Length: 506
RNA sequence: GCGCCUUUAGCUCAGUCGGUAGAGCAGCGGACUUUUAAUCCGUUGGUCCCGGGUUCGAGUCCCGGAGGGCGCACCA
Image 1 (cartoon, rainbow, N blue to C red):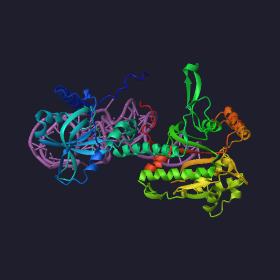
Image 2: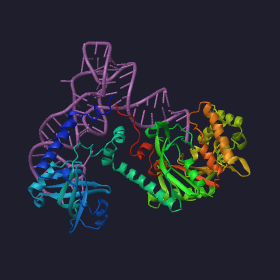
Image 3: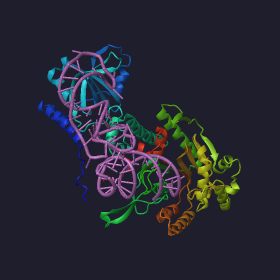
Image 4: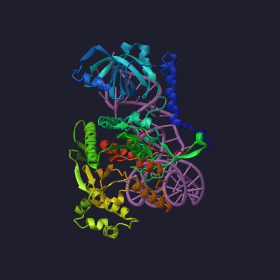
C-alpha cells in the first residue's frame, strides 16, 4: 500500500459544499483584487491583550479616535447587522471585538465582508471605543485579508470535543479551544523558566546525542534505527541522558544539564508517551541534600510562575500548598507510620518479611524483593503523598546507581519528590566507583541473559570514564511532561503534548 | 495483554420496541446602523466507522475487524 495514494482525506457531501462556498468567496475576493494568498506582511503594532489593558478606563460610548492601531488575527465570529457588523478577532493573546460600518468603508469594501468567513485571517486598522454593552471594541477604518480558511471550523460554542480529532488535528484544536492553547503556551513558559532558573545557578546546557550505539542509563526497550552512511549500522534512540552527562562531569564541566527528548519503546497511557521530555542535571561536589534544596527552590519558582506568585496550586479539585519547606519523610519510616507500625524496617528489608507483608495486603507475589518494596510503597505510602513531599533514604536494593548512606549501608543517599500521588523527581548522590559500576553492569548482563529485554547492554566506555575519576556528584531527573501536568492541572500526558503519538489512520 | 465505554451531517449531540434519518450550530438566500452563543423568516446538507450475518425490513439485534478514550496489568 502506497502512502501517497488516497492520502488526502475525502470530503463528505456537506463538507464539500461548505468548502465550495468558501472557494467561491475566495474567487470573489480575487476578482476584486483582494487575493488573500497574495498578502505578504502586515505591520502589527499591538495585541488584543495590550489594547484591552490600555483602554480599560475608557467609558461606555467614549471613542479614542486619535490613536490608531494595527492588529491581526483570525476571525472567530462575524455578526452582521444590516449596514454594520461586529466580529471577533483572536490573536495569540486573546479576543478583540471589531466594529465595521458600511458608511465608512464604502459599498465595495464593506461588501468584501460578505466574502469573509469564520476562520479567515485579517489585519485591521482603527481606533478603540467602548460599545453600548460595555465591550472594548476596535472601530475598523481599513482592513486587509491576509489568509483564507477553506475548511469550515468546528462549532463556535462547543468547540472541538472529539478527542481523537483534537490530537490528530491539533491545529484545529488550538484554533477553537483557547484553554488548550493556554496550556501549550504555559508549557513553553515552564520549560523556559526552568532553563532560566538553572542557568542562573551556573549550569551549562549540553546537547548529548540522541542516536547511540548502546542506549543506557535506564531500564527500557529502545527504538532501533539504521545509519545509511555507516553501511546501515544499527543504532538506538536514547532512553536517558545520564551516562553522557556524567561523562561531562568527568571531563570537568562540573555543572551540566540537558532538557531533551527521550524515547522509550514501551506502553502508552495517560502518563506515558513513547517520546517525552526529561530534564537531567548533574552538579559536581553536591550531595543529595544540596540537590533537594535546589529542587525545592526550582519547583517553588515554577509554581510562582504559573500562579502569579502564589504558593498554592489547584490540582484536581483541591488546593495544594507549595509553601517551603516541603515535607520530608523517610521511605522506611513513612511505610511504618502509615501501617500503624506493623511494617517495620526489619520486615521490609528482609525478603521473606516483605513477601509476608504483600500477603497481608492481599497483593500478588512479587518476583523480587525490590519489586515487593515498590508494591508496598505504592499501596501504603503513595496514596498519602498529596502535598509536595521528599521521600528520602531509599533501600539500596531498589537504587542501583546511588551511593550508600555512610553509617547505614542498607540505605542510599537518594530521594524522590512526590506530589498528588505522582513522582515529580528522582535524585541521588551518584555512584562514582568504577569497580562497583563494572560489577553492576556485569550483574545486568546476567539479568538480560535471563530474558529481561529492558536491561540495557553495558556501556563499558562509561566505566572507563569513571576510571579517570568522577568527582562526588549529585544528579536529578525530572519528567517535564508530568511536571507540566501537575502545574497545569491536566490528568493526561497527551493534553500537555502538542502532538501525542497516535496510530496511523487506515 | 485483559476489561469497560465510544464512533450518526462540517461541529455538538438525540434516535424509544427492529418499521421512510432528527435537532442546534455552521452554511446558503433574505431583513436588520452597538452586536457579542445576536435576533427574525426561508432553505441545502447523511459511506449511521468497516465487513459479514439474522430478518419481509437493521443506525438499532448477533459475529468479526478498525480507530479513539478510560480502568487494570506491565513499566520509571
